[in-house]
Amino acid sequence: MLSENERKDFADKGFFLRPAFASTTTSSAMLEDVVAICRAAEGAGVHEGTLIMPENNLSDRVAPSAEERISKIFRLHRRPVFRDFIEDPRLLGLVTELLGPRVDCFLSQFIFKNPGAWGQPWHQDSFYFPFDHTPQIGLWLAISDATLKNGCLWVLPGSHREPVHAHVTDRRPGANLGYVEIVDHNMSEAIPVLIQAGDLLVFHSHLMHRSMDNQSDGVRAAMVFHCAKSGTQIRTPVDAPVNDWMALPPAPTPRTRTDD
Image 1 (spheres, rainbow, N blue to C red):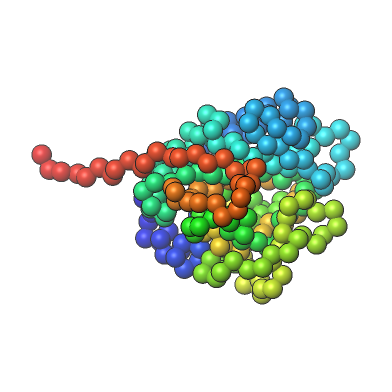
Image 2 (cartoon, rainbow, N blue to C red; image 1 turned 60 degrees about the vertical axis):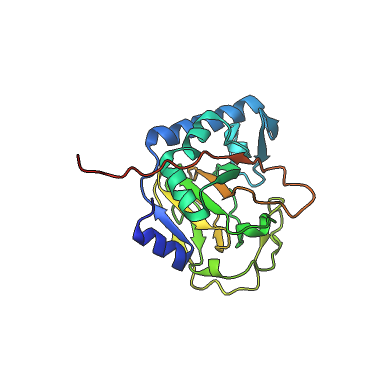
């Protein structure tokens, strides 16, 4: 269940933070699984139902490992360690309180954010989600600490109350394919989201956010899930290849204490 402060933050700001949500054991298991995928796949492409995207902006490394060559891995939420997490009763209770009693997970991605990797420009996730229901909910789990130096997220509090703005193609030369950006908005009141490994950021799909380049010597890894109300329809002829709709079980009914 949500606390009163979490409800207020989500309503007023479009996001809230749940500290220390995932254990080190869970985060480590997720990282081990995606590293194994990278090494087995030997490059970008499709592997065991996942979709692997290359890193286009590697730092100057003599012999990068398989995982250092990868930017993101999509379609992970049917794999056991990720499915166990998204079906955790604590998470189900949180998401169903925001979206309703029946919810689907339709998108999952592991973001490596290796040293030298570029950030993603200002955007709203709903621009990528041409659905008939809003909002969708993003669940951003920090696998490693997110700092100013390694490219943490920045958010614009309250921007979730705005409609989806026009997005233009990412204008940076050599930018990762598929990125878009908002250019018609004042972002001067944006704030960084500095979080520790295991913390969970929950945010509205209209919230404007971005990430910065990783200028550190370490990885800034994160696991992100996106959820929608069950029955949501796609408004385009073909769904995005990164999407994989999976119904989540209903949240457990909270137990009511009774006197004997």
